[in-house]
Image 1 (cartoon, rainbow, N blue to C red):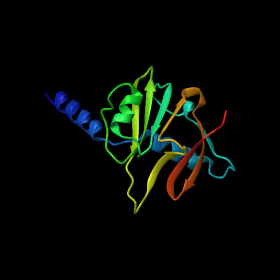
Image 2: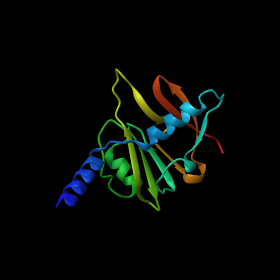
Image 3: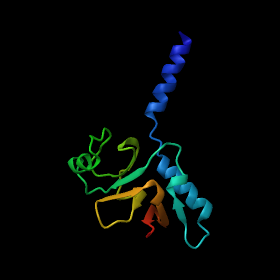
Image 4: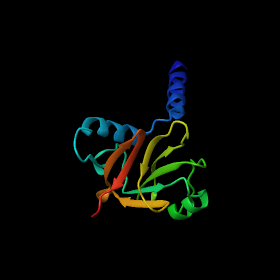
Length: 142
C-alpha cells in the first residue's frame, strides 16, 4: 500500500510542476554564451523530447486560429499568452507558454511580423537578444 501512496504522490507532484523547458534551455544557453558577439542557439540540439516542427503563436492569436492551424484542439490554453507548440509528425509533443505581467515582463518571444511562426527542426536556429527579463529569439535567415 505504501508503494502506491508514494507512486501517487510522485505523479501528483510531477503533474503540478509548471516546468518550462524552453526557458531552461534559452536562459542556460544565454548565460553560457552571453560574452559572445552573436549568441545563436540551435533548438535541434536542445530538448529531451522528439519534435519536428516548432509553432509560435503570439498573444494576438485566438484559440480558434491556433486549433485551425494545428489541425487539432490544443488542450492547454489560456488567453493573453505567447506560446510555443512543438509537434512530432503533426501531433503534440510539448507546449511552453508565457503570460506577461506588464509590471514585470519576462519570458521568451520569437521576433516575427506575423502572429504565427513555424519552423522545422533542422532550421530552428535563433539569434538570442536580451532586453531585461525578456529573451528575444530572432530566426536566422536561410
